Image 1 (cartoon, rainbow, N blue to C red):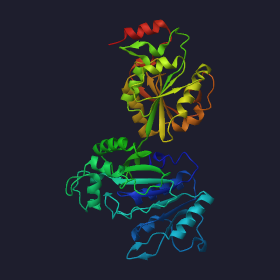
Image 2: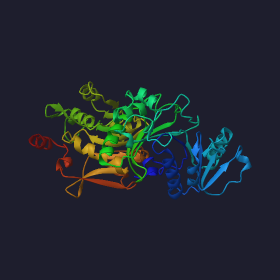
Image 3: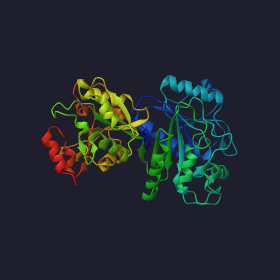
Image 4: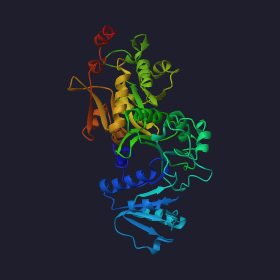
Length: 443
């Protein structure tokens, strides 16, 4: 995915104030995003400002450049990337005057113009740690993107590779001169006095791990991204040079376990599968696949079902409307998900045989492509469960009624498929004879 899509800015008409901090590609990311906004969102204009110094050589990256103390005194061009800075001194542009920055924000909001702000300096190094006065993030920032250059991994911790190396040493718990390790960088990015420093309380936090241009760095970056989701809303891993990213967000698991199983004649959720109840097996699979959070929607005889989950780190939600059909359980699950969830994988309580590997494969594919709906395709022609729904589909899922499930919105979103060579995904337990077949298939 390119940067605009990885940030999900292609999905919204809103124009958040986006600030870039850190090192290893901030300015490149800022102008790359500005160009993609112009090309793909049909915004005629993008404003760019800076609360720190810019190199004079960076100014031509904009279509227009203005130095002023009052925006009202400037006749702005009708389109393009417009950069606002302070005066040029010693081959560096001074920060955008505070008054102009406020005026830009007001005009951007009034006229729906994107405003991007460079809010940190790093002396062209791949990594940095902030000084006491850094980073100068405006209080009105809606999004803050912390950029890091993974090319510094394995290099000595010194000023050649890390700006303010002593501060990085303290935050990352790494001795000066030692090779920079991914664990140390993760600590710095996640530290309240590191990558999280001065981010406004309600701003969206995004970690951008740049310069992952080899398979090894992409793998290392993916591991870092997953751990950073404890404190960031999203993480991107990839290369600004190649304009290619994977998007890491929390993927929830929603287990539908509220039904009466009237066709079966007994509570299927508590049938035994390899020594454990169905519902517990499915919950353990979701946890093993690193879904977070895992939500189990219960209804009929909910106390009995919940009793088999009490020692697991899952959220149990009681659906009092379970008799109204599966749609009520889908909505009950979505309604308790945090706002920073990127997608949800819906699992059925009568499919304990579903392996964690297919759940993980759905998540990995979504990280790379951000499909709206993604389902396994078995035997090259048959759609199977579980199904991943990107959060773009959540509003339509919340409009479902009756016994309709996710398939009811397949005509509203593009459905993508993941080839999977295991026909056990097609099997569910509707009747006692199905259960006998499932037990016979145990290995």
